[in-house]
Length: 118
Image (cartoon, rainbow, N blue to C red; front, side, top):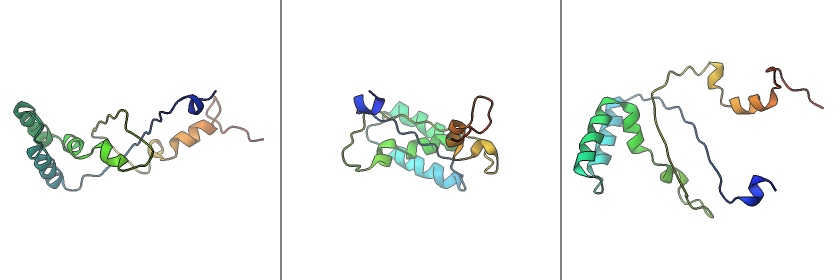
C-alpha cells in the first residue's frame, strides 16, 4: 500500500519569501494584534512587544497564522500547525532560490546530471 492509501494525513509545506518595504507598518500591525489578544498573559505580552520591536521577522510571525491560510477548505481538519520566520539574504536571480528546485532535483541522477529519458 502507498502512503496515500493508508493515511488520511497530508503535510502541506509552504515556503514564502517576503520583502518588508515598511518595517514601521509591519511592527505597528503586530503590536496592534498583540494589544487586542485577550488570551495573552501580561508577561508574555511584554516579551512579544519587545520581540516585534527588535525584529521584523518576529512581527511577521505574530501576524501570519497557518489556520488563516487554510480558511474554510472543505473536507479537511487541521491536525497540527507550526511556523517560523527568519531574516534571509535573497537574490531572485540565484539558482538556490529557483521555485522549481525540488522538481529539478528529482530529475537529476546521482552525479547531478539530468536523468536519461526513455
